[in-house]
Image (cartoon, rainbow, N blue to C red; front, side, top):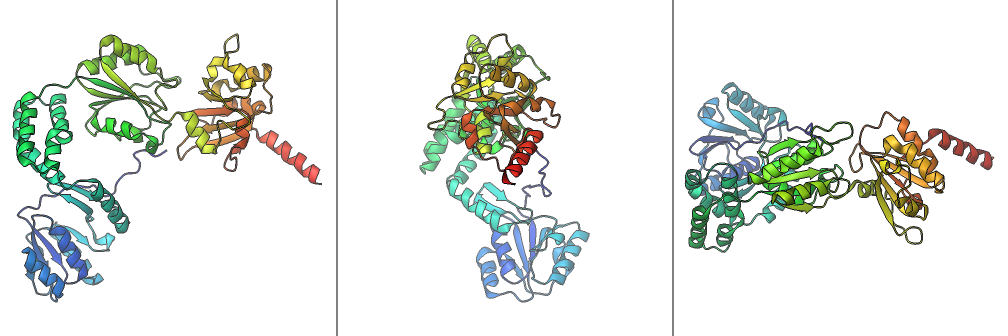
Length: 482
């Protein structure tokens, strides 16, 4: 499972360079490339080159950079905020790097990571908005590919919109209370009438629209989004879920929702874990209901993250009723439920023409009562059965279904941590299912799929549920071949 252990070795920041010297040492193509990059800033650019090529000399003249045509000397660095060594000479680049470090000036040496204090990013420039993409020097070409994709997504008008926003910032801070109200104002500014007017090139209308927003600003009503977080892999989150996470004032999440998904929300959003996993409920359902109502009444935009799909064994019905009773608006955003992720992990058809045309979602605890639930009849008639949270009652599930008439040889597929890199897959038959209860190496959520359609799955990367049964089958095969 990918968590935040994927930490950056270089932390991205934006350094103020207006009116400060940035020194580039070098006279060839590498120096010119750095000059073009730094030329997008308001830094005072100084290029030191004992033999500058014509292209670099011409660029410096056209863009107002200072070209010092002399052999490099440490004195050239003394007033610099940043230094770039781009000479193409390994020994000279090392000397420049050592000099800069002695002067406590951050230095970058082109294509020499061991001499760098920082890396230069690929930049999408919508000044004053900027997007910087870095790979810690590992893949400059990859950074350029990502830059071109982002560049295509961001309209040229974003820079003008950001500039307009800057002119309204002082007024917004003066007249609109900090918190939800101010965030609502800026959301409407960047996604509403001012943004549309800027995109149309109508600066006067954009200013009028922004002024109207400022005058009419009022707290936005609270809203709760019950969002399916999917089975665990963050790239299975829906686009709508991601958008809501980025807009949320608060994120309320269950224990089974990975940190990688929670961290896709706004960095300054309030994060409220509420437990809700087997054997560990940090809050009761009534406490969660009350929390959602309180946050909604405070005017907050809330994402309630539920593992899988909120409407499949997620107790969303109780939360929706509590919100209805309290008059708090809400919406439901579907997610990929674990049964679908488990089936995808096995390339397993949940329905199969001529074999099964129906399926059942259930929990193993449904089979612990005195009578068989109605869906058991569907299983016996050929439906595919997806059992959630069934590891601890696997023996009951198998025993009751076999006792009711389902063949012990019915195919079974089991997945721990469906959709995640740490997933484990097992295959067998219904008679093997009780072996799940004896396994103490399964710590993640387990999904079990039972039915004739399971026989069409890809078992090439899965383990047998019962090693003894698999060994017996292998011996029988060998004896038959003999």
